[in-house]
Image (cartoon, rainbow, N blue to C red; front, side):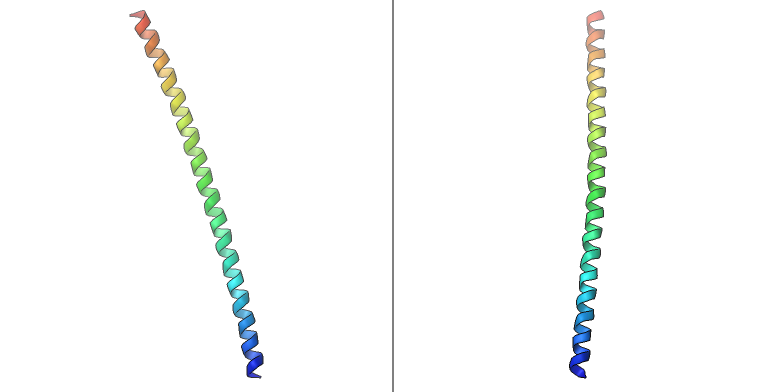
Length: 67
């Protein structure tokens, strides 16, 4: 009887550990996705900034030619 209860407890603990591991993996996956989206936003921001600076440099170069 005690062996049966110990076995049942062991099985339940194993199931709980597996569930916790699955939840941790899922959480890590979503955190990784969020980080990738944030990095993509930053990349777009930097690209837009580079284009803006290029346009500004062209404008300043044209102004210098006019002067």
